[in-house]
Image 1 (cartoon, rainbow, N blue to C red):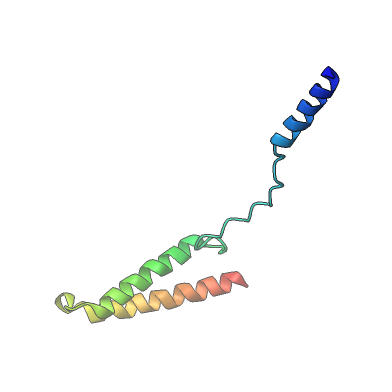
Image 2 (spheres, rainbow, N blue to C red):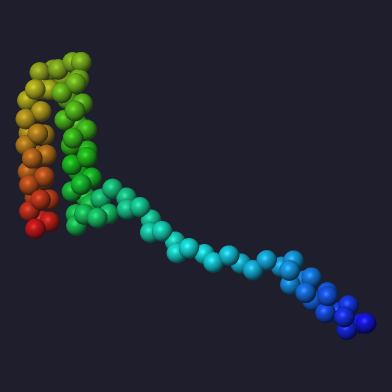
Length: 90
């Protein structure tokens, strides 16, 4: 009888201890902006220049006459960096 009681206890204990669920492989982290790019500092520069360009184009004042003159070189810098990044991906 003692053996039967011990056997029942072992079975009951085994049933109370859940087995760990199989874990799914961890999904790769979503790449951050610029991580899939050879030159992340160029992508960052492009973001900054585009923000500056947008600010200059929408500015409510002309910065003492320099706003319009500043837009052209900023736009040219954006264009040249975009071309450099495109060239570098080839």
